[in-house]
Length: 471
Image (cartoon, rainbow, N blue to C red; front, side, top):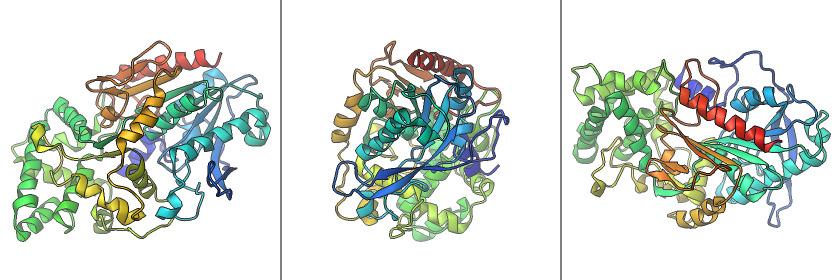
């Protein structure tokens, strides 16, 4: 299976990839549309249509409604028939609905992704979209779901990764609408330089025995990209099988390729980071840079990448003026520029931390594109302190939120359950649970063959909480 397809299947973003799921679970393949205003809090009252899917197969009168959103991904029926909320719906008589986020997929308030259009991509607008939907679902369920559903059914919001943010915020901002939230790997805490991304990746490599050699390979790459001649840079690019880009863009491309498997689920039988990264370094007499070259080429080959797709992935000048809709990466970049930062940078040299990406991947790699893509009205750097003061602090003292994070999750230090301790206290009503040995949002993904006992435990805890919330 191609890498991109595999990761999409894991995250719940593709149809037709079973990967151990019960293939008998049915789903509605009919897209529905809910009208929303462009701006809930301003003068633009034009309306647009928000896409959603419904799975009412397991619903019984009096049962709850489970709301899911793909967040920064396009919506597919996978979100109502292939993730853990659907499994839980079978035992709790629930209806499952998945709602697309504004400015992703087919749910676009305005028909382009220019900076002037994306001004309506705000946290407030996104949350009010979901709240408006839930209000209508509670008061006129037959109109929304096209089937008989009890009025004022209890609602639980589920989300993994950024959609975990949405789930937690919905419970905090609309506690009368949302009875509880399951926030898996929710990247709730903003950091400007999110160098902890690679430190978590390094912990995974260390557990697999190749962290030191991988870091040595990065040092060898930087010897050339930072200090080498133009001819040396071209020779390195040829050795690694990547196109001729600027040294900084080459560094960024390599960072993306080498961490491509970092969010893939770990089971007792398989670890994709070992198979696709560490296997090239361990039990080998190759120099670190040669092992790194083999790993990079293997990723490129397995995903069927071409020179054009590699340029598209690595060239920071690519598509600056492409405002077409359904570009998840562009909408997501805007959110980083204007909301929470979390730029995945190399650690500062003063930190003496091991590096797992080039030192050229710093704020100067990310921030200039904010204005190049979206215009001079976008302020740089993004004010992450203001973001945290408003959106992280709103979660303090809120009940009925279940926070989970994998111990090997590359986004762990942006979640509540960081590697150095919990940013919010764990309590009986809002527990914080670290899933030992797991990566990103494994507890809400598809059930895996040979699943980790810790993932099963996380699901058991969460299921019991949901049952308590919906009583």
